[in-house]
Each structure stands twice: as structure tokens, then as C-alpha cells.
Length: 493
Ligand SMILES: *Cc1c(COP(=O)(O)O)cnc(C)c1O
Image (cartoon, rainbow, N blue to C red; front, side, top):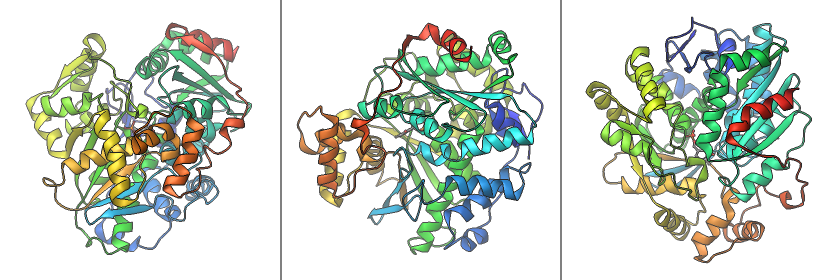
């Protein structure tokens, strides 16, 4: 299988090259040039099999230039019981006959980003071997909070790699900030930026597409790569758990083989839901993919109007990992549904870059609405949902999951069949918001709230949060968004 650019500006490359580069050097995102198929019979045969075996099945379809052994090694290093403290890896919790919650946060940092970022560093190391590159790789990450820590954990002390994380100074929760700033490891750098997530992401993208700047740095036997979901190595592992959810429902006899199910995904950069779309393309029986947004509802508006318009007020919400106005992976989705029309993508993204908006044609508009259903909710409803879900099902959901649960509930009369709601973070990661929703008060002590979550949910404190308060803060740098290029130079000097 080969990989091509959404902007049509590079010759085909193999998987190792796509993962190593992270992003197409002249701008654009790598996508597979075709999608393999998994048959219904194969799904049936995967019943009762482990997450590792399923992973091997899916990853092998896309990584033809890796040997079987290389893929197995990556999987063993990532999806083991040390990293994921749950036998199911991504367990399904049944709320009622039509709603299941898929918990994607049993990894080391308590967010779903671990699903990809525990394996991606190993895929990258192998990719360097396969493409015979022995340069030092510098991973640049822009984070709205969760990617940063998951990437730091995944990459720390990995040979031949340095990782530099940029996060919005006031745009992440206290736990998220502490998680990142206390990271040890010889090769980790964490920097706060005075700005929002989009500033961080745009800064990183600019660096990737600034040929001259890169040349200056890369002449010292250094190569940049990305751990954001613009990297194919981030997206690919996310396809696995969509299959896992389906197979789990088969095992529980909750569905018949071939029956369609829906997924409702709390969305930011459109990476998670895109992985669901790719699973559907591969033949997984998925009916609707529901894209749930918080008050930063740029995607909801796009799917309703056909116009993507980022020129709007940015809202800071209690689901900060979804506070995004430029959803990078939408580009991959549009490329696919336009029948790989790189010209259209180029013109739309030129408009987005220059005017902050673009509008798709009628054909594209009709097509995208067939596949994705959208909904959004506000802060008050999100809070109410956390309380309702606890009162009704005795289940404590985090703020991001709650956005999706609310949107799913809004659609219960219009969408047929079972819906799996992607739970993207442990409630422990956003404890104050969760407790303030449950108890209608105004706590601001994050660690008191952590204890309260344990008490109310009768669960063990997630290991990502436990003991965090006592850890030493090792990263303290704050910069303005114009200084991202300079700080990288300084680090790599
Ligand atoms: C990253 C993240 C999201 C958004 O996922 P995308 O792939 O960017 O759409 C949602 N919830 C949580 C908790 C996250 O960390």
C-alpha cells in the first residue's frame, strides 16, 4: 500500500516514510491511496481474540513495508497489561439498551490519546530503520492538553528522539499542566505559549511548511516529525478500537453479525471520528458517525451549512481538548469524499489560510451529510448530563464524554440501533469540573476533587493522577507565540 498527499504535492511513499515524515513536506497530509477490506466473516472469526491479535490484523493491512515481526514487536510494547490496566484494553460499559460507553482511557495518561501514542513511538523507530534514516528525530507537538502528556509518556527516553511540546498557557486544566510539567526523561521539553491551542497548532504547522527554517535546522542531522493526529502513525492505531467495539458487541450477543451500529464521538481535531470513518470504509458495519462538539461548534456549523468558518469567538470550556477551531483531519475526510480531488483541497485550504473560511460545492456537501451527523451542546447542558448520567446509571463521565452523551441523547429518536459513545478521558482527569457538575458547588481545589471523584464513583484514582501533587515541576518556560521557532533553535543548539 502507498500513501499520497491530500494536496497532490508528493510522489507516493510507503508507510514507513509517511510515518517518519509526519506531514507532507510542502504541506498536506498523508493518506492511504486505497483502503483494505475486512469481511463480515473475518469479524466473526475475531470474536474472543485479544486486542493484540486484532491490532495485528488491522495494522498489517496498512503497514506492508513492515515485517510481521516488526508489527508484533510494536504491539507487544504498546498494548500490554502494564500500559493498559484493563483486560479488555477498551472496555464497553452498557448504560441502556441503545447506549454503550467505550472507555478509551485506561492507558498511562488517562486520555484516549494513549491508544495511539503508546504505539506510535515504536512505529516511528521502526520506520526510521526501514527507511534507513539515522538522523535524530525531533517531535513537535501542539497540544490542547491531552496529546502533550500522552506523547511525552510515549516518547520519553526513546533512543534517537527528542520531543518538544507546546501548550496554551491558560488553555489546559491544572491536572493536564502538572502532568506535562512534571515529566522526566532526558529528551523531553514542555513549553507554555501565550495564546490558544490554534496558535500552538498553527505555529507547529508553520514550522513544518517553512522550508528555509527546516533546512537550517535539518542540516545538523536532525529531522522534524509530528505526534499530532496529522501524522498517519497517530490515526492508524485509532481504527483498531472501532473494530474492537463491534466485536465486543458481537461477543455480548447485543448485535447480530452485519448489523449496523453508530458511534458518537466528542470531536476536536476530527482525528478520532475520522478513524471511525476509515473503519466504515473498510467494511465495518457502521450506520451513523455522530460528531459531537462543545460551544466551539465550527464543525456543527460546517455540516449544516457547507461553510467552514473559523472567524468566530473562541470559547474556553470545561472540555478543553475539544476547544479547537481548525480541525486538521477534516482535510483527510474531504479529500476522500471528493474522490481524492487535491485541486479542491488546495483551493479550500488556501481560502481557509487566507480568509479563515471556505465553502464546499453541493456534491461534496450532500455527500458529507450522508456520512456524518452533527450535534453540539453548551456548558450548562454538559454539567446537567454528568449529573443525569450519574443519577440514572450510576456512571461518572468526564466532561468530554458528557458532551457526546448529551448529543447522543438528543438523537435517540432519530437514529436507529445501538450507539457506542467514545469516552475519551477518565473523569479523574477533569475532576473539578466533574465534581462541580455533580454537587453544584464551586470547588477549585483539583486534588480535593480527585478524592471526591473516587468517593462518588467508588473507583480507584487513575494512576495518571495519583501522586501528581507531590511530583516536582521540571518544566517552567513560557513564551509568546511568535517565539516558537527561536525556542526550538535554542533547544537544538
Ligand atoms: C483529543 C481529545 C478529543 C478530541 O479528539 P480529536 O481526535 O481531536 O477529535 C476529545 N476528548 C479528549 C479527552 C481528548 O483528549
